[in-house]
Length: 177
Image (tube, rainbow, N blue to C red):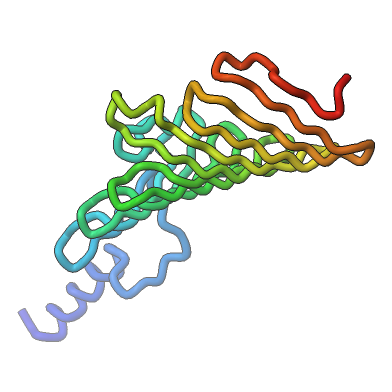
């Protein structure tokens, strides 16, 4: 077989397999980008419930991008889940510490959480949330999961402060109703 014939055959095989062609689209349900050591660092997924970060469930209607550190621990996730756009940030242990979300009605919410996954520490969960509804900005503070809470709102018709005890009972409301 001549060299020209072999080169033509290789060229036809290459063209047929797409080698040398530029594709404008890649179609897949999940794409995993690895580092030089072969460790997953970025996961782009539209696999619904299978696409959640380690230990999480993203739900059936999910599209997300997860960023992992060199140890394989998730550190950040950008997702659209059941109409909510959500950015989650985690500490080095993979515990969620902050979230920025916009719900299907367009209401934004920023939360900061301090919680560990150890069952004995669940009651130690502290949180701060800042949100804006169609009527007013809100600030929510809580010392622990079952602890007292404070809600501050600044509505056009006046500001309000609500204080609750551990059981959710209102201890004070200012101005009073």
